[in-house]
Image (tube, rainbow, N blue to C red; front, side):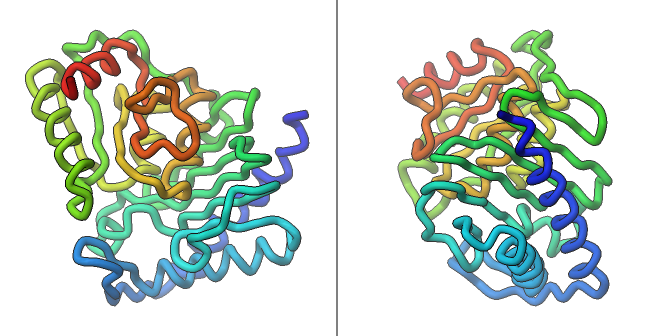
Length: 258
């Protein structure tokens, strides 16, 4: 069954790489505020437009859930998620830690995903049941690291949600003297990709934006990692996502919030 998704993965790879080549020739980074703590640039809009046009031409009957222009689509039947630029703040400030990502869901199940990190020249992809890959390399999380030597990444503070902000602050404070490193890289695509290939031991983010998390969730799971929420195994719709290679780290997170 899974083999039918290879053509969709090839489409995602070709389209994201095409969007980068087309939209970054002379990137305009003028900022337009979405809120007090978020903004988009013309590059975000141009990349999204490029991918949406390709999607509508290739798969005209599928649903699309994308960050900038199709953010209210329900996850019904076949649905594509698209984050044209994940880590816009980094990109707009000429930092290479940003990604472009897509996923495909069938009946609310993530079946294929691609994360493209153009400035790092890395391409990650996964198909449900067929493992996680970086190019032609098969990936596996690094689950041999002792908790005291682990690095763990967090999503940016969510300043417009007091409950999420307080919970993240508690967890960071609690883990600060129990693991080796705590980092905020500013892009979910980077954090999930780095977890899948063993560069970090996990990632925690509060969000209900599927375009941020669906590609990375499948990538980490297919690389042998675990995806939790604060209530146990993650279910689509949960507002906290914890990707980890270690149940011990997950237990520490729960302890922090008791």
